[in-house]
Image 1: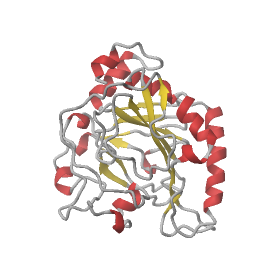
Image 2: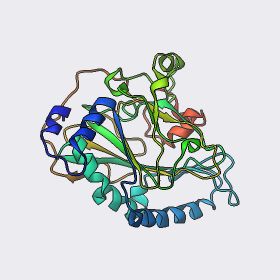
Image 3: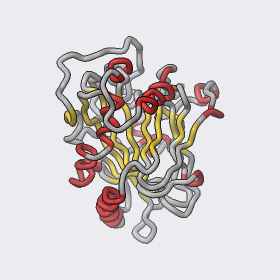
Image 4: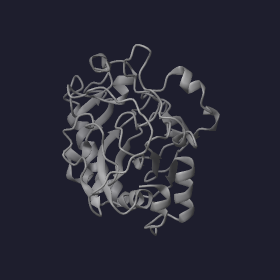
Length: 302
């Protein structure tokens, strides 16, 4: 659905100025948008999964762990597909307050794409290099976004999400290296071509949400604070934005669920090319493992 068409529908929770800022810049931040009652419920589920992870020695299809993770010093990078693992996560992604935000920016016919919980653990939790989401899960059009929830207070030392304004209106970048291996990040040359000095880093109190367009160039620095920075991400698409590839680790049964309105009878297409991602049917861990070159078996284009 095009921005002009979306803006003809009255907003649920955003102001018209906020919607226009999102379409202009490619991202938005709303301080303290999610209330304490939701945060308490999400933390109860999350604490239980952190405890469960202590029994693991290596990553699996549920938990992505830093190499030095241990029972005494748990260091999670990601809980994969949280909506599939606990009803509270799915309730939040399906009926929580962020769905109104998604509708205001994607239109009245809306589908859920996926969820993930990135921990970015304390004292050096890994960076996320500059990248776009679209090359990971290309769609027939770009009316796709991700909404992140800061479950704890996030300051500049904790590696808040950063985005480059207007980058969603630029090219869809190649996320392969010169050996045609998937890296999940922009090349050094493409990165150097961007106005990185304009990047806005979106810190905020617990309950703050960040919203970014699927084509916005974004990333985050390492977490050098003594506190972890859990970011619960839910991605949505307009109903007329059809996935061109299965999403990595398609074990998430909620993928493509219509959460508002109805399924589109017609697909809308953007007339622009995009290099397709690798075949991840053999498995997928996370952007962290790929960018840190741990997932060598999944880096080839075919």
